[in-house]
Image 1: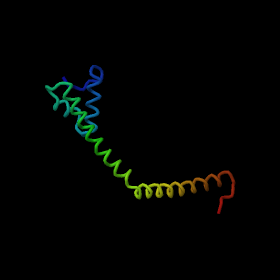
Image 2: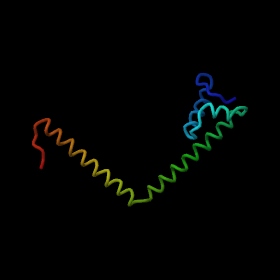
Image 3: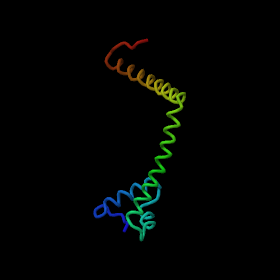
Image 4: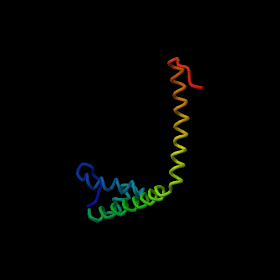
Amino acid sequence: MVRYDLKEKAGVSNLLDILSAVTGKTIPELEQHFEGKMYGHLKGEVAEAVSGMLIDLQERYHRFRNDEAFLNQVMKDGAEKASARASQTLKAVYEAIGFVAKP
């Protein structure tokens, strides 16, 4: 029997939490869906849902990873933002300790 009970059925509850997070369905909705079904049904659906989520994630990873121009632009943008922030921080530190900031 599939029901949410952290104390008595921690494994089932964990799988229901995972399935809820991946599908957006509430725990009561999932309990109703699995009414009359066994633990194996739950495990199968969790595996399918997580696998589907990971396939999308893997496809996005490979698309970004194979786009060198995009990655270089992301790194350039990040370096510019970091440099601007670091300059502000260094200026504040120099002022706080009495150093003369670089021109």
